[in-house]
Length: 221
Image (cartoon, rainbow, N blue to C red; front, side, top):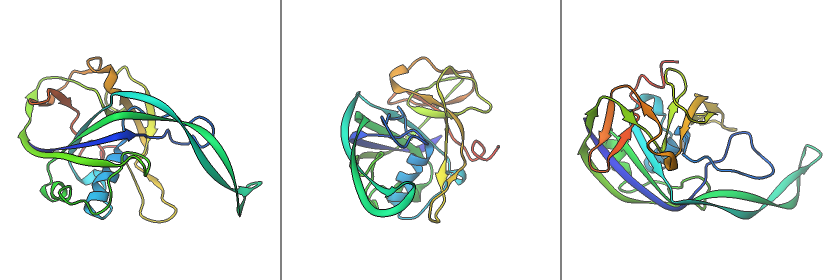
């Protein structure tokens, strides 16, 4: 299968756990689909849903660390207010990160040559840059050993943490989570431990096995 591989790098990245608002802020070890398509939408300059496109991705990082971050909280006793008080939180982040995004749509790929909006991997300070864009032929394989990605819980069996995550967000305000469902989180540091006994695709140059999201995967539930 002929695809395009977009190599995206950043010094830092962070992907917060849903519904964790206060206290220590851990980071997911792999970006959810909503983050991936937030990047695509930022590059294209318009909101694009993942349910109508084919894609795969692999995310790897070198290490994790914890930073202290000052936040400003508005409101008093649950009511809106312009008065703010500061607080210091411990926030986890990933360092030395790299995202390999595989797409088949040439128009979406072309948008990464000159992104409409800045690309970030998490917070606004996690700025990312495009290292390369390359066309290549994926290799068909009988089974895949996955890491650095997410896999839907329904229909698959893997020994990995499970987290409910959205696939994308609405365009209205306030934005709403869309396509929320459970996913396996496959940490890059656990590479080689998640064998999926079903046909799939492999990047023969980087030797990455890919979980390929064709148009049926996110539409079958």
